[in-house]
Length: 522
Image (tube, rainbow, N blue to C red; front, side, top):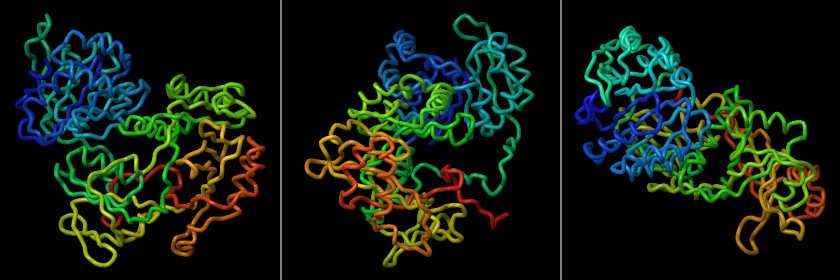
């Protein structure tokens, strides 16, 4: 019904990128039918993106039951279920069909989810119950959001034929008409968006530039986890990224702990950290989960439990544990209980594989016509359609005027030898600082204790951050002594070994993502 209502498959012919919005993911059958038709009729270089809102996500088992009646969709359905995310509120990005298909699931109320969405939708599937059974989906506010998100001429199909739906869509700028129904229903509605684009209210200096087409060349500067993840995502969207790594292996740690950081779900930081962990967890190729234990002050545990419950994380992602359970998990006696994160794991730059990577130090960027000109140490330049800066605190040194608000902070990790007691530690434990179980191979295995946090001025202090600081090691051991005094005591005379690096930080601890602000242009 929906494919006929939007004019598929003719509607996506000649479009290298096609975006479908859906209200009411339900069992996913609409997405599966669309995916099946699109992959059989679209060119191999085309990309499909589906954005689907669902207020009440089904269990994976319920999806399997619904899919069982459609064996012709079996392989696609199995791939969808394998990628299906945890049923927690927020945005969940899935990559399917070898990267040709992206599915962004928005778990939450339709009004709130659409307000948070930035997109240009080519066609809409408006599924869901009739207005009398699901009034929240058919409000004037939702209709206005549909108009805001619609591309010029966007098509819309809905199972509903209710007058309130037709009038609401018409008032928002959609020209609607009745058409024959489906599965015993006499009539349904279809139409198209026929109004001027709706102003989304963005301040002009943060307005996004026109999107790049598939095949655009993108330089990604920085070979750490962020740069590698960006390059892999760009390749998956049909772009041609080239990752430039300065080749300074000492500038980044071999492995980092990827663990939840629970914060208030009502503030931007808390929501971002929750979504960031879920997104990272959903990436392929990661090492298996080891779990991690967090030992906050006892008074903090109820607050963290509340955060986890309000995020929908209680159970499989975050669990409170008593002192005995914490000790059993850690392998050594802990002074108190805390929070157990079963899905935590180690990751590192080498975990994120990219196809096009070059060792070269970038010294500056300048605008070209079109695109950006990238200059390299030793001379030579190359021009790209776009550039992604992922060079940590050095990113601001590459563009005229720098990046206001981007700061450098020095951090140090200490590498400590095994003792009879420390060798029993089974998993990472955080307590303000953190300590890992033995990591590394054979006789080179060490515990990693961290981490310090100190502001660093690149202009005034230069490369002095590379040297290890005995005072930072003492401070780290002092923190460890508050939870594991015996371990800390045994390491007081350990040699000063480890790693130091610079973090890129911002005032609110949220990342800078998006186009550079063109302040001079306004």
